[in-house]
Image (cartoon, rainbow, N blue to C red; front, side):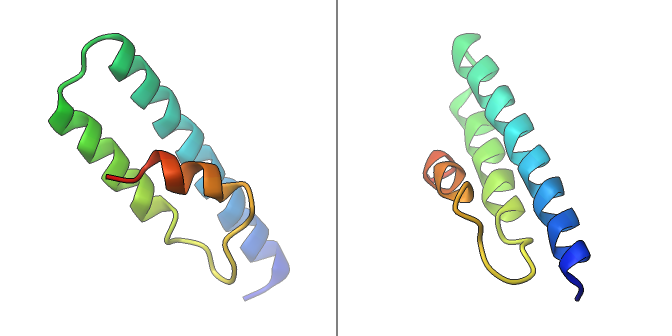
Length: 68
């Protein structure tokens, strides 16, 4: 894979993580069910597995946020 491809994947994963973060915050603010919160966290954990080479430093925040 090329460096460009790796950067594109990183950008996509970061976009997904930000959106999941927003949905989690909205859900917590509006009484989202615990099951729905767990599903969002599971999707977030999956997104973090999409890196081609190494996990970037910024992903640590999301790894913690998406823990069970």
